[in-house]
Image (cartoon, rainbow, N blue to C red; front, side, top):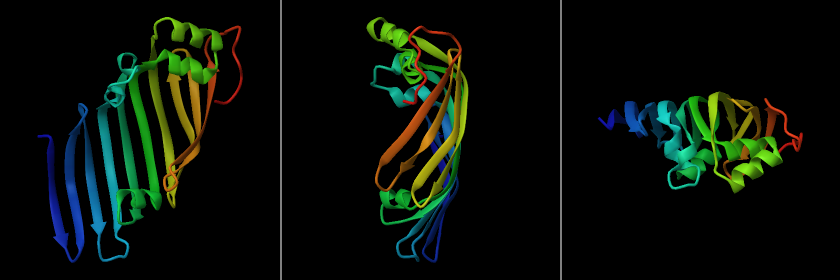
Length: 193
């Protein structure tokens, strides 16, 4: 079944719980609530995403053939508004994202680590799959600002560390990526991207 769930509406409050949706080979499920008695309405989500094919997010891009693995998430947030953009722009909550195995574009990994010689070789030649052992991190949301400072991705070539914030109301993203190379390159640079 691609979609299954139960909807209950009572006194201006709609609850969809439990529900499951098939998503890119995996699943998304949990509960959603919409409280229309507040002005603006309050929306809340308590969701779990499991075993979703990471490659599906790169369909139609040059990175599709070099990307793989499964991703998951635990999401608990709420916000107010008349649209999804307004709800996300006021949201509070937390999320935990994870990735198991798989691969991503070697060009993306080398560029993040600023190994200029290896990234240039991949750009000029053929991009390679960079195996990913795992990735995980927390996101804290406060009044529509999502902050992350403990995101880590372990590849066979580098350990990548992500930190930054995204203002969902203004649709901005500030992110630093730091890489600890597992090999030595003559043109390695130690700098944030």
